[in-house]
Image (cartoon, rainbow, N blue to C red; front, side):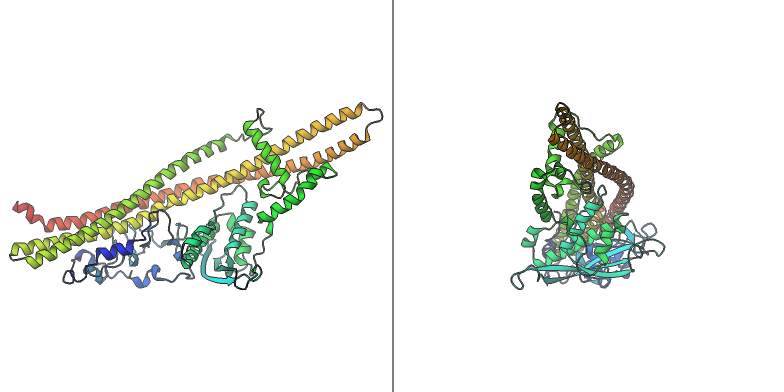
Length: 569
């Protein structure tokens, strides 16, 4: 949304007049002292090919707060409190208006000086090297390769897909080894995501990347594959950062088991719907009413999966009754603390959306300011050239030199604004990230609501069965010697009630488990949100102040150089 796709053409326009500017040099004495800081383009991660083993290039993805021109890095020898902060490396070409360094080639330092830390694919600050005394799980996604689907293709070469090399480094005891690699396709990631959603209901499970069918048709194939690689890497790193998911058997199998992903096809929605459709007639018209009872093993999963269409219809009816019926459901959500937190998080999400939109506006404004100052500098360069060529008196030459100083300062300020914008994106990106977190929170709440609905439905079913049994027993008692058909029906209903009661007990336990998972995740979210927002605000404020001071120095210098005009007037 706030991307800088046209930046290359803008810079070409800004520094286009090469022949006109050959004799012009910008003085940049105050930055020359930093030219030997060793942050040249040779060590710039932006020059690495995609698919490096470390996968650090995953941070260069596009979203509403992500520009495409700079990488943020911090160095251990840079202390903004002890020395003048260096906003950018000063290559020799910076002294010439003809060949300014590309903004994409610059490695910018941060004024907040996160020593020995780097930004990983999730935008999370992490240590540059894992500590041997702490658990770690690092994942990179590289080397996309096109392969043919020989099993499902009627025509040779008709179906193809892309696989990615997923490399893992870990010291977790759940894994067999410390470094291993597998190849997976996007379909495997979908299976993993669905299986995690089934097994870890109530947890704030990170969302997998979308299938993006439309984007795959619109974008260039190579660009689409690279964007998907970045998205998959970010997703897997988020899973690896989750304190529970990182130790799951599902994730271990995905990352370590060679060959075809060894996960059950329980998440195939199409297969579920087919099985449910086959099962439905037997449930409705079977010889025994027991066949219509809910399987106790199935109630730990939401009905919308499709395995039991009859159960899905019953829960839909219960949901309508809860919303529109005049009677109170047999059980309701009574955790007042949870209800209060849910309401606060809903309000937080709304405020977060507003702040994120304003952050986008700030990024756009800083971008525009940087570009405008650059264009102003070019305009003064052209004016300086004109004055120099037409100068006949010393006063005209002096005026031309002063205009050159103004041009120099405008270009310096333009560069500083772009550096500041990169730092602003780096820190305020946390807002965008938490919008995604709120989606996972809502999914966990849906797990809780679905589990409660299952309990309500089974309780209503038990009440209905009990009423039917009482009615049949009353009718059978009026017949001398008993009514055998009614007695048989009563026995079947009692068996159905026993199975349903067992299912209800399982559903209650599942609901309580999800509630406990919600509670733990909310506590984790509160702590992480405090830490993340403190770090975000600190970094944002420190960089705004640091770059403002540096820009003030630039303009103070040119003001001092042109102070003679004020004295003469």
